[in-house]
Each structure stands twice: as C-alpha cells, then as structure tokens.
Length: 254
View: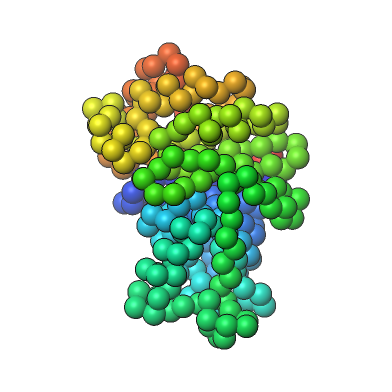
C-alpha cells in the first residue's frame, strides 16, 4: 500500500497545501486543498473519503471534487465521518446555499454522494487496507485514523491536543511504523494551542512520552511562516529531536 501526502500544512500560500492523504488511488483521509493537485483521472478513481473533523482546512476540496467528477463515475463517492461532521456537511456545505446537495443529485435513490456515519473503533477493509477510527481531542468532535496494510501501520492523529485515550489504542498496534502527529503552534503560543486544542513543541514532548513503540515520527499542520521556528523548537528538545517535518508529496510504503 502507498500513502501519498497531498497536503500537510496549517495554511496555504506558495507550495503549501492543507491536509489530505491519498491511500493507493482510491481513498482519501481528509480532503484539504492538496486534493486540487490531482489530475481529473486521479480524482475519478477516489471512492472513499474519511474525514477527521469538520474544519475547513480538512474538508475544503470535498464540494469541488464532487462537482468535478459527478457524471464521470459509475458509483457514488462515500464520505465516512462522525455524525457531527455529516451534520455540518449537510447543514452548512451541501445545503443548496453554499453548494448543491449531491446527496440528492441526480436523485435520492442514486446520489453522487453517500454519507456513512462512523464511530471511534470502527474499521473498514478496502482493497487490502484496513482503516480504523482513533480517538482525538479537538475543539470540535474529531478522530484520527490508523491505516494498516497487514505488514505495517501508519497512524494519523488529525488535529488534536492528545490524551490518554489515543495512546492507549496506539500502543496496542504491534506493527506501527509511522506516526504523523500535529504541532500547530510555537511554545510562545502555548495558551493559544491549549485554547484551540492543538499541540505546541512542549506539549508534543509530553504526549510522545506515552508512546511505547519505535515508530518514525512526522510533524504535520505546521503554520506557514512559523514552520521553521516550530521545527527548531522540536529538534532542540531532547525528547523530540528525532521528529521530522512531514513533506508535501511525501510517500510512505506499507
């Protein structure tokens, strides 16, 4: 299985793209602005979108992608998400005011968009990959995901301030190879990080003390213009010096 990072920034500008991971060629985890780099042929192949939470930087490309591929596919796109995310998409995006309701187009029996309500712990087997919803701690209901090929697993925290529930699940993953964890703010913005339920380098270090495996650790959701400063604070801390910044277009093989 191949995982390609379409976007991993906390903002846009230049080469910066917001969060999205492409699993093989048929599954997205989140659909931030990085999805826009895919070709039409690549967009048509995507059958499933797993959403971590409802914030715009993680869902921005869902409406545009559906508008692009509708009529070019023989089956609908399925959005897998919590009841909260689905409610937000229905009420605030696909509401005919912001965007058409593709759950009713071309008709309710054969829509272009299907919602699949999921809960923490739910697992899905899709073309030799297993995707499992993990706990997250954010200002809105959120989740992370484990992606398991059988030979190895990658865990993506999504946006989170961490917590014991997450680590109790992650530490049971025997084949964990990669951990992608967010750090959105510098230590000078610790209070803002706490208020918005993101990590800063200091709280990242505290969270990683709970990790019992030797997984490779990659940092995501760095803010444009602050990314160098945040990564400097991370690598200067002996507890997190082994962490590296996730890169746009980076590929992981499991």
